[in-house]
Length: 252
Image (cartoon, rainbow, N blue to C red; front, side, top):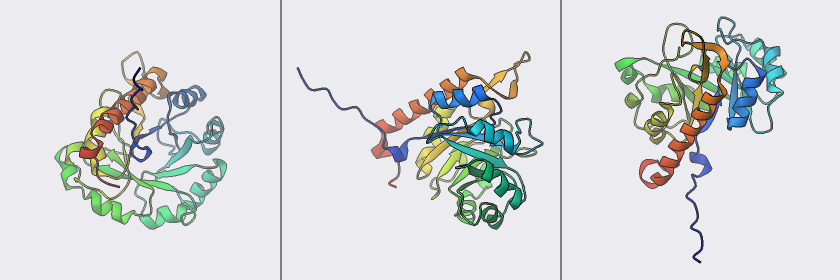
């Protein structure tokens, strides 16, 4: 009998990390973990329909096993409140989603004592081509990664996807693709954006939420089956990239 051929595996630096955001319930945290999410997000922005208090975020985060990271999303919050929230959720990463300056992000994370993500609000339509993502990433070079979300009224992507094809061909920062992702489109998003950056992660919220009687997402309530389908679609993109890694992906 011939020896089995080794399977092609994607190097860990190229594996797409997955964050499920806007969690408010224990069962949704458990579903995200069971599906293989790398991180879960808790919204600490009170006007959001998915908002939880820092105390509630801490309760939910205690369900997480080792190596699944809690992420605290804040919007224009004062530094002392961010630091206090982080103290309640050990190991959390902060996601700045408002109008925070680089220095404000740095101060609110204790001068770099805690890693953070900085959201970039990418205009919809042709406006994406006019957003200087390279310069934005340089301004926020102390962030662990730049999260790409659609620019809509208010804060957050509103379930909208911007035009991925209009992003710069090469960005020297780790990126997190967000905004309007679903199990149906995340594979295409990864294939379009991954070649443009050293590593890529994806972040989903409304795209894996349960549907109400009107067919619209129930904000803050996740659908376990959609989470599993989303993760499967991400892994399908990774498998496709693995077959063409020597052609499609830049050296890192």
